[in-house]
Image 1 (cartoon, rainbow, N blue to C red):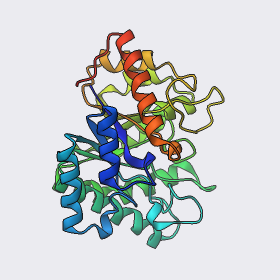
Image 2: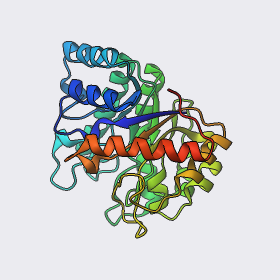
Image 3: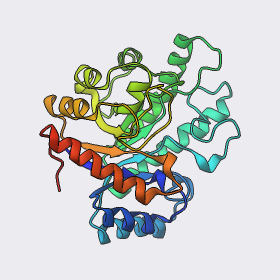
Image 4: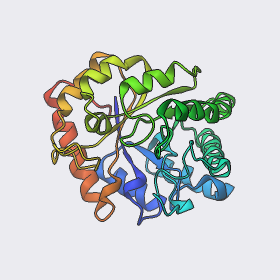
Length: 286
């Protein structure tokens, strides 16, 4: 396995400064935020894309994933991460999410990234779950076709309070649409939030997992990303499960809640996760 850190904790830093800082801390991979201020696909000029490649090369960093979940650039007043969603009542708002995701897939291909992540449908807002699932699948189909064309994985990330929260719900979704370029971004903290045991769920969904997010969560199960060691998640058990199922991809630490002091959060998270991993016989590549 390989350990990365998401640039979405570095909202107050440019992309070149962010990757230089993370390389200095010791990371060898980064998840790129496909959003302002780092890589909003809609208005990213060719020279800006080249600057991203140059910054990565200069700091000897690989891309773990392109995060197309957040959409700060739209600045939707309802919620800056989830909206516009795949299941908006208004077709024009859905179009914004669809077009953004297609652009993120193309950007990932241009940058050499193997996958992007997206939200699992959006908030239900009082509508029937089955109805919203059907709409999500229909909206996703042309984007999956684009993923196949670009040969970049499109990974759906279950999230508390959105359409797909649990392992059971993800499996039902996965039964509705099939493609070698559609997969699961497994978030350890999200799994804990919705009362799915992370280690057990990893074993259950092993064949579908293509990328992993990691953060700690408090005992309340409230969805708030915390530095590993500040919550109650058993990371030793989760990492052991990943090893047992043969997962050898990226594990990206995602601490967008720590934007006031991201260097400290990134450093402490790395130190703690490597120590836990060593204790259970899990090795992250140098």
